[in-house]
Length: 586
Image 1 (spheres, helix red, strand yellow):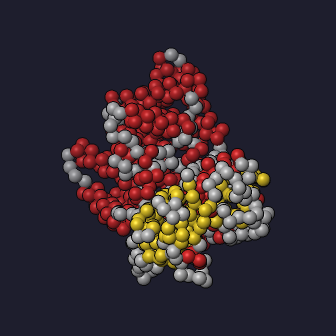
Image 2 (cartoon, rainbow, N blue to C red; image 1 turned 180 degrees about the vertical axis):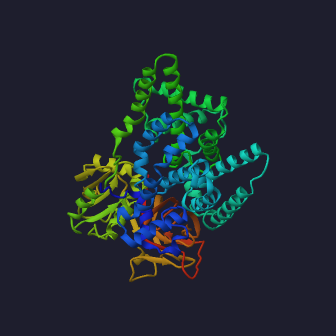
Image 3 (cartoon, rainbow, N blue to C red; image 1 turned 30 degrees about the vertical axis):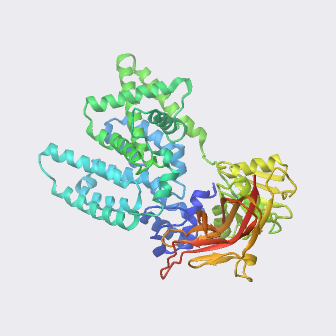
């Protein structure tokens, strides 16, 4: 359909464009992380076919298509029912989110493929698989660790399956031991090479904190989390099941029937491969190791569907035997309708499409200044593809304050463009509201999650915004007369003395930095040798604001000190300062 890459995909795409195989094995830019073999597979397709959307999405798409048929045989083997297998395969094959993530530049679709392949190889009665099961599991399991973030969860379930077989047979299977040794070797190697002390770990835990299950199961937070998770998992996001005509209550009884059957009949295989992964992911979520959120748990979709299809079959079979055969068939048809209709109605999921907005920007043909918020990496990606004409723009931080924004555009004397997302308006949402309230937007274009506004500059006499009192321009205040940016290669830089009147001020440093080992420069701000704040210089120019009280009319100097300078043969951590604004505040 030609769906464009959206921001999250573009974060990864820029890494593939910028780096070769060797560098891709190190922490990626823009807080991105993915399994190393998935990264190398995507890079290989891109090297051969170019860096367009189809090539970048090919790895996940091909794996999703090839493993799709396996699900029918998995349900059939677990439930021993062709009816349950047909119901489950129908739900699975038309699920709109599964289709969406099978064609996205993210490894979530690969996670599903890994689940299907490993479980199929573990329980299949296919003659070739039975004959070569341990060799196939050793190879597929080892590769899955390098392809999928959740492979270790599926492999843990398989280990539990092996242990229960040993217990049942009263002996240890030596072939299984070899498989486990192979998995352990690859897991440990992968963990210490690519996961242990990854620089993005802390940030990711902060970003996805809302997806971690509260440990106290008796707390109100736990109840809120479970209610939200049930709503997302079954109705609004993952499974897309209809709640019309109180079907949510029927779904509840479907699950009760399935779980009761598993426990009463001691169906250990269904429990190990369908219930245990869900329990494990909740535990890992509580331990803040892995989120429980619909796209991160896409690999659990088969587990949920097995339980749903089994429960629907059991109830239909009961109705058919106790009441009338046709009534059981009608129940199955009704269930399937409610299971799949929302997904069919939602197809195709296409919430974001950036190219019309890029076309709008291209019409201006470099004649106007451009500021970009969230879509900045999408803009960079399509510039690399040659789709964009203008390479000059300013990045607006997603969490920018109203005051910082007006400081950023203070030098504009004519209309400029602001390119932003309509779906996630973080801090800059206040900026958009204020621009509209002040009547500064003279032209606006919106399409599928993105907007471009032509904005006229703010009148400096506007009393609703704190005027700029003065500013320190690096080329005037630092010892760098002929450059627009002052670099801190090590240590610090100090401004020339400046008279500052008594009052309250916000001091904004506009800077960027280069990382070493994924860690960006940390800087301290001093006024006359007294520290007033600190900030981290990220990959693009961003404003960093601190409050300062000037207690009397006197001369000050501003010092910026980088305290974590470091250098290797390949990387050098530095700070670059473009401007320091001083804004008087009440």
